[in-house]
Length: 127
Image 1 (cartoon, rainbow, N blue to C red):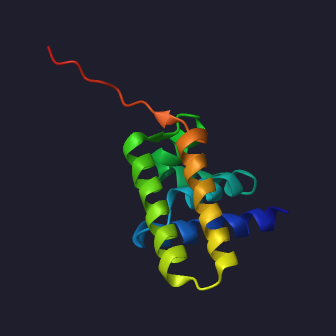
Image 2 (image 1 turned 90 degrees about the horizontal axis):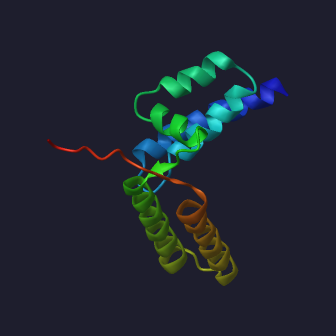
């Protein structure tokens, strides 16, 4: 089982790395998955993911229940809508697959909008 978790963690890191480069492909969710897998297999690799400068703080915030900033939520939902619209509207010929893609997009938007908490940014008060 440990090897399966290690494989999943490395797969998550790989997909997350691609997601940081390719527009429209989420990256952070794969790093969250990788951290979860590594938490079941290798504490050192879990800590490595949490220490990554670009995504580590977001993974830690999500795991702590703080969610994601509003700006990130808007960006994620916008990317889902754009990708689903492009895929289902222009690239997919089969109507049944269009429906599956549209439903997957709706589930993603619903999950981010209503299930993932919005991280409250601290307000600075100028004196």
